[in-house]
Image (cartoon, rainbow, N blue to C red; front, side, top):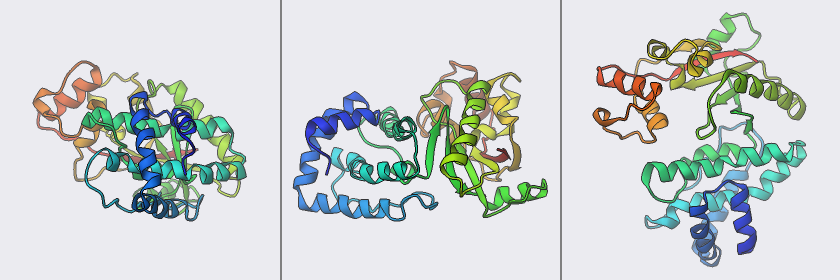
Length: 299
């Protein structure tokens, strides 16, 4: 299911799994393959993950593992992803996806393990549902940004149609995501990613014409402009978008989670080491709230 221990260790390196996690994952893999109950659980989850490979479904909801809490439960989704690798690579070959795009896309696996350790201090995989997008051929890393094959939601569809574009709610749209641990979000890096996306989807998904890029993120909260310099990377990123919706309900945990690594931090004790940290923390300390903005622009 996972190859021998040497092959598995190399595969984990290819997925950018942090080195401190590799020994534990390799060691427990024998238990997963030798225990009939665990092996059956992997096979059930694998069937759900690869069903309709390549279709736009918004990822897959993997079955819960009925197992006592502990390292095996925390790492279990990783074994499902490992078992899916042959199917993922076969789909990428069918679409003639370049090997370097495959490698960089699936390397988000290691980023989710690093985020789990940063948040909880233990080994495990954070947000396994998120990674099902990568392992189903629905999301690709292209330069600094990630692009998800998706459909335009109602919050953005009306705004797109009102602007005179021949697309709207339910039509194809590329969801844009900004991964962590990948350097600054410079305008040059964003421009390069967009150039790569235009060429990539036209070549490898010619049956899916994408005209619009959408994004839902705390990075699109206009209040950030009150705290950040006008030439900051985040402000310049915001200015690419036409804001289609700002929700009524705040999501204060979104910037706290991404800026400080945890959604449960004591606001009064948040560090203020950078301009962005000071912006997020001071706004909350002053009684303000943060919102996840939704926006779009033409590809």
